[in-house]
Amino acid sequence: MQLTEWVRFIAGFPRSRPRQIMSTIESNLQAVRARIAAAARAAGREPGDIALLAVSKTFAAGEVRAAYAAGQREFGENYVQEGLEKIAELSALPLIWHFIGPIQSNKTRAIAEHFDWVHSVAREKIALRLAQARPPELGPLDICLQVNVSGEASKSGVAPEEVRPLAEAVRTLPRLRLRGLMAVPEPSDDIELQRRRFRGLRILLEQLNAAGFGLDTLSMGMSQDLEAAIMEGATIVRVGTAIFGERVKT
Ligand SMILES: *Cc1c(COP(=O)(O)O)cnc(C)c1O
Image 1 (cartoon, rainbow, N blue to C red):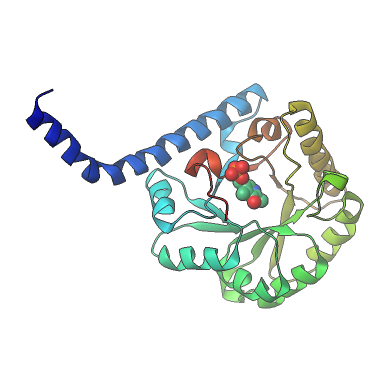
Image 2 (image 1 turned 60 degrees about the horizontal axis):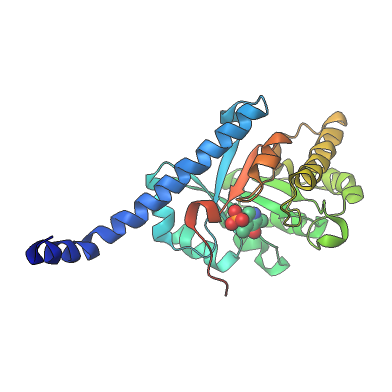
């Protein structure tokens, strides 16, 4: 290459960078969609029956925008304040926001007013507060109960034997619509262990449905284990790293 070509080449970098970030998210999204489709086919399921939730925690509104430009509509957030800022900044876009993090009682109002779904309900008191705070004009807040399917290895979620009474309580609350169950099993490279955890959640859902609950959602599977989750019946996979890249630990 001649010197003048080099200069033009180097000078081109700053301009092409935003475009490159966009296309990374876009190609990551395509790769994740392909993984979902392949796992669905392997499980004899329709790829369209599995929704992709893009977990945008720690990433900026601009990255959510890039995912939106690549066709993504549903986003998950773990931290209330961070989520509220992005929801406000992106309010012109037709996005669906899911709250998937631990819930403190003093944050229930903000969640009920600004999110469409909550995946992480594990206590009746929290459900009650969400119901009280949900503005009626927004329509029902879609709810999943977070279940601890990993026993001692995890602290978050309701114990499997407490799911039924919690579901009974949530079902009676106004302005909430109980949709199903969610779990975050302990990380593992053992696909059989992953599948066992997810199967446990599916069986709990089947038991509730046998008792007439009419639930349609199994929120399970992340970047590392979405295939195992889809094999066991996931209807929503929650994927962060495989779309947006590694999170910087804070
Ligand atoms: C962060 C997070 C995810 C996404 O995890 P990745 O491994 O980055 O795909 C999914 N669900 C919950 C509850 C999370 O906190």
